Image 1 (tube, rainbow, N blue to C red):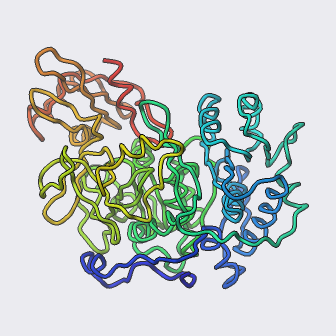
Image 2 (image 1 turned 30 degrees about the vertical axis):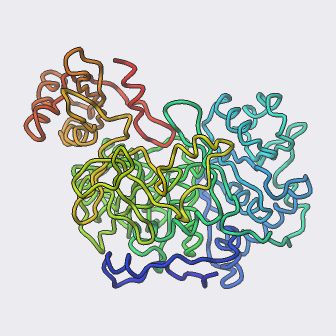
Image 3 (image 1 turned 45 degrees about the vertical axis):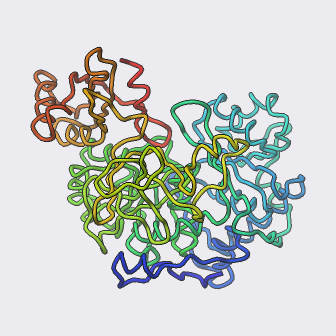
Length: 541
């Protein structure tokens, strides 16, 4: 176990130097609750770990010692209800202290957390709870009615805990915690032992449950540390609007922040408010933020002009493009560091403006410790400049253990030692990876394979465009034609704009990439994680 605050990256080295000198720690025992909470609780018990900003504007600060005691009480309460090693504990809460306590308590027992997005409907919840075989669930008054409505379809769900409402057959979270002892030994977990199941938000078929081991935290540390310009500096304070139910909130912010001893701001934001987000950063003294691309685009669309106080700003999920990067430099006064990963294998590519030039359209280079390549259709490693599929070589601590109860789809994810991501990209001579598209988003037109990202970036660079999405639609001559869906800024005039946007793409990129049609819409369909659902747009025709 490393000492508290010990960095994984050595400042002062070049990127190549970091890669050459990096070695993964290989602990025999590793538990996320111990690593993120108890180490600090012993060393600096009063150190701030979490600040909860309530809806009424009040705050409640939690020290590491307080988190340690409360999560041990909760672990004992869970154990009293028969929850133990290997049992799945579902979590249907937004960013709250109770959500973090549930994670820590479950890890102490060797149980497996199943984070669930608070806005899931009954069908989405039923599938995930049934598929995971969750034995217990923690929720609030907002989520409880949905759970009670489907409880009869979930024979494995033996216990429901609610943080702020009482119903027959439902345990009071704080009441149970208050009756339990505050001493609880942490099970002797190993890095490979299961920690949580993160369900993918795939656009086709049922979601897949990516099972991650405790080592996933270790695997995230170098990428997150670099994306935040050596996270762990004095005064650092982390926040993200991304829900902790997703990897973006849980493993890009919450758990790494606690590992580095950086306090995390918890604030439930039912719907992202760009102006409120900008104000919150200043009011709370946030120094480090993870803002997904959609959040940044909404802030730009809302006319946010100046946000100061951040030391680092990271983003991931979709390529930002030069227009958004330029806007970010003006508004935030710093470079936005893009990084890349997916539910199964996160934070494997990153930028760090302090160490390297940030190149628009690139998610950066392979983070020290991770081996990333571009593969061809037959699984061969391609040369620089050749388009192919991003792949990550195993073993890798950040990589998922398997898909829950799905060995067939687990096997399909790999080509020998390489985990395929399904994302098309090009790696240049210096190792920068330039994302092009999801494999199923690639447009085949007149023999060309066209990625939507480049066209979308060009369209979004127009002064009247807030967001854009590009898809391929059936065409009897070209196989597919390029079609653009565009959200305009307030006050923009549509007349003549479709032709101007088509001409812009033809002139700035290439005529063969120019949209054959442009449709103006009020909003684009998004996944719960803020990614554009191009499949839904394709179905519109």
